[in-house]
Length: 97
Image 1 (cartoon, one colour):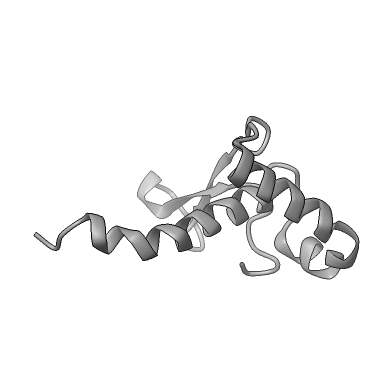
Image 2: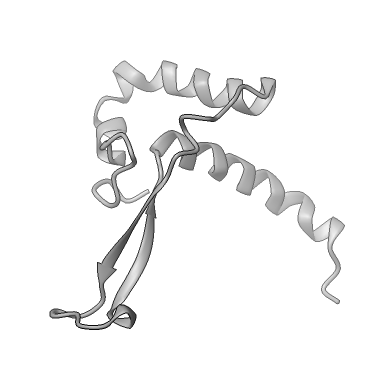
């Protein structure tokens, strides 16, 4: 994750977690593992803000904007783990046809 892009709904960007991993790392790791291994609920993590970012200097029409979603870093971590797990098995489950 880029350290200073798109803060989550909690206002924290990845740089906070990177800089203070020695303090928050065990808690974040534990939370991610609890969601993945024990099906803990993700109600608060699953909240995402959507915002419009201008593509040009002076936007005047909707097509001049690009929507981006601002998800929590913990949410992104969980889905990155799932993504990496699925990359291994999807080729065996889905044919190219």
